[in-house]
Amino acid sequence: MSKLQEMVAALPAEPCCPALTERELTVEEAELTAAMFKALGDPVRLRLFSKVASHPDSEACVCDIADVGVSQPTVSHHLKKLKEAGLLASERRGTWVYYRVEPAVLAAMGRLLTPAPATAA
Amino acid sequence: MSKLQEMVAALPAEPCCPALTERELTVEEAELTAAMFKALGDPVRLRLFSKVASHPDSEACVCDIADVGVSQPTVSHHLKKLKEAGLLASERRGTWVYYRVEPAVLAAMGRLLTPAPATAA
DNA sequence: CTGAAGCTTCGACATACGTCTATGTTGTCA
DNA sequence: TGACAACATAGACGTATGTCGAAGCTTCAG
Image 1: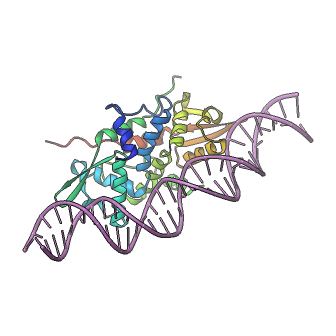
Image 2 (image 1 turned 120 degrees about the horizontal axis):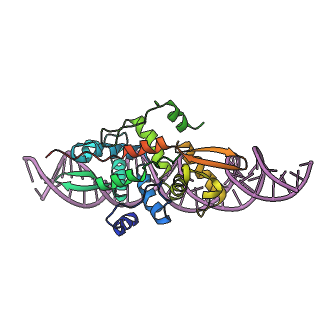
Image 3 (image 1 turned 60 degrees about the vertical axis):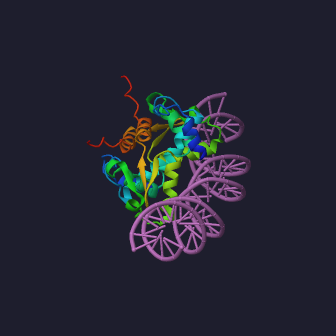
């Protein structure tokens, strides 16, 4: 189990962090959250994630998404990173391995990016 | 002007990309968007961004946010990265330099992370 | 049991990244 | 003008990252 996965496991069930605009993140919050953003911070990984996320039921076989211009081992490497960041989960079904997005994590990240409320005049 | 800034400038005024769950990103969209996520993918940068974003008017002097445990040049380096990614803008006012978050960009990133609608039963 | 398909792991390599110290630049104030 | 404060840039250095080819593991068809 990765260090990040341990951190994720140690979190309360509720979403990690306040909106970035609400208050400054603690060191620990920043560490955890940055790891998630980092996982989406590579073009190939982002495309893989988008391919999974936009599939029916937000789930796809590796064979369905592997066409992103890099070798198959590289695809596998990137999917592993996304999984370690808590963004994807995987499950083997017979010959194929399916990856699925974690909707709660996606929502939590979205919440982080909530813009600040307009300042009173 | 950085390559990324050129890409940002070349975009339509409207937010860049569809939700990651809506359809798979094109290569160009992924390139641009990944650069933004990447900018937030470092703990120190994320804390700096959060410090600016949570300040009144989403704006702060470097001197207000520089205490993140790294040297002053490193802070400057990270702020530059955030600026190149289009997440922050800067302005000199006398002795001090103020950084401010771009609310539209923040909102666009948040929209990217919109969870998929529930599948019909 | 054997072979093949689907995916992961391993080891190597070039490049990118985060950090530092030293030095520049810009603005303020006496 | 000179000294100082606030930031930025330059250069160096160790580590992390993205990529590949080769080899390993699982599962299924025959």
